[in-house]
Image (tube, rainbow, N blue to C red):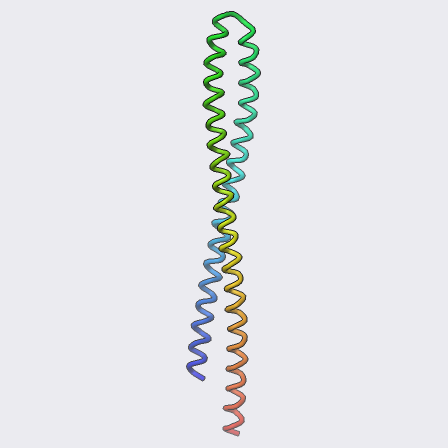
Length: 139
């Protein structure tokens, strides 16, 4: 009976540990989701800026040679911004993959937690049965 209680307590501690890890993973997942949202917003702002730069470049190219040189500089800036946008897009995809991996790990931990809960319930039922047997033997 004491051994079952010890085992039950150990399983309960392990379950609590898994629940704490699950909560921590949820926090990490939420933090990653926030980062993805921030990167998405930044990417959208860069795309809007890129559209503005493109329009400005087109207007300058219709002007004099000085404007043509300035347009070339804006084109370089546009290329740089497109590279930054592509890098952010790649980073966003990577973060989505990490989020998916964390979600899979979270699901695995939830399944383990459910298994531990079921095992704990079975142990409690065994303890109750042993306690009833002990009471019957004493009575």
